[in-house]
Length: 170
Image 1: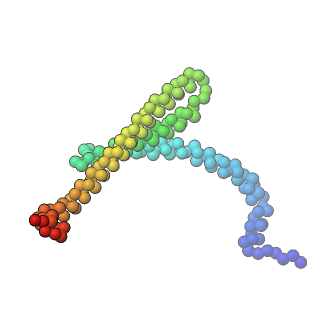
Image 2: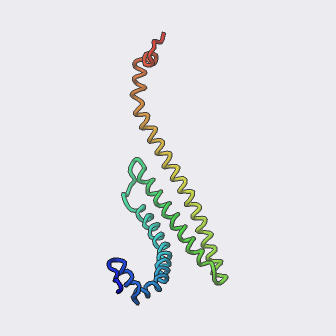
Image 3: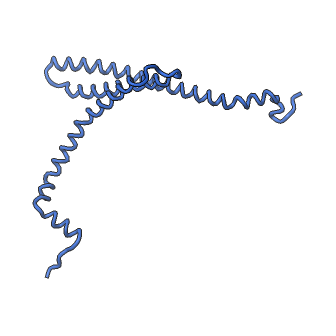
């Protein structure tokens, strides 16, 4: 007399012996490969969409920048970053095309060279914008610190520096 298995283990065992399960096991590498190549094909499109969206959002908004200049700085930063990202995506895309007829390769090489120059310029602009952000943040931090310290310095001036330290100055 043979005992029948019950539960999850028995169900999985029966499922593994079915024709559909075997067909799925045989097709699984092909399905996984198809998914990987689909994602690989969609990544440049998603990167391009993100770059163009950043550029378009940088040009939308208030008609005039606020008096403190942060709005204009954010717009410039987003525009530069968007163009940099778009240039990197286009370079990667065109480098995949650099095989084929000789006249096509020359034209694509020129496009890639121009894009490389543009990306280098945008990279420099990104560094400049980051430097500007850091300078403004440092200026803002020092201004806030000066506002906080000013009452303490004014207190020293009223009392006299010697009395504030704890001794009398002759």
